[in-house]
Length: 314
Image 1 (cartoon, rainbow, N blue to C red):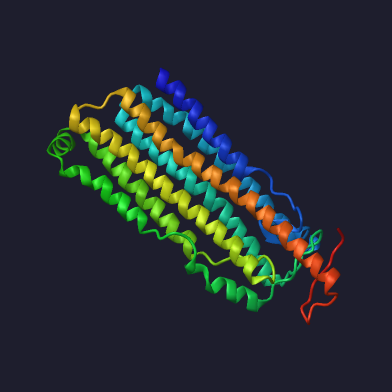
Image 2 (image 1 turned 180 degrees about the vertical axis):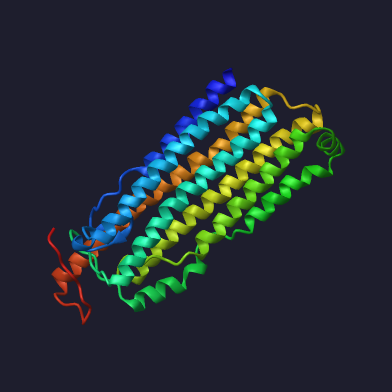
């Protein structure tokens, strides 16, 4: 009963955190909607309104269904702990990946709409327009950012390493929950590696005509996500190695061992959330610096050397 209550609180809290970061209504602020610079008229267009309406509908369904699923998963605590672990791990991975992909999918569609309609500039901000040359320059350097996904292969190797111990091999041979934990740990690292690779291969987003500023923002995003995913694999591997210690020493895994295992597996959630908040904080700082630079250029230089700068109210 204690485990049921603990994981009920953890699962509901996890959905709440994810919804607070990813699921809240997206507003048009400082010339941006979901991280894409748009003119005010574009943000009010029917295409954008329809896209955001669909996004809110998908978001509500996604988090409602996962909240119900998270509550239902806790019921497995009253059955086999091993079954609960694998179902809970699958649920957790699905929530992490689904929340990110739901947001990313809408962001890409909005960015594609911007490119399709040739929307440049952004009402309410003093951000320089981005042209195709800047877009090509920034996008071309996508592969030079972030840590290598090969780090996850190292963690997969660490998960396999305990199989060299005779007692661990015997436990895996005689107990199916050992294989379930092994496969869960290995699979989670592979999922993190795949997400890591996708993020690094994603085309960079152009925020302004300042190439250095664009690269700084995109490098920040990819570095933070790289380190967050590597940390996720680290704690996932640590959780499995914790369990293998008891396989080797006691040939037995108790409830208290599973509790520590769950805690270690939950740490990546908070790492991902911290990464999101850090990125948002830094992006706000970049935007302020960018605006200040443009204002100073307009005041002290008084000309743009042929570069078009759209100054809007505020």
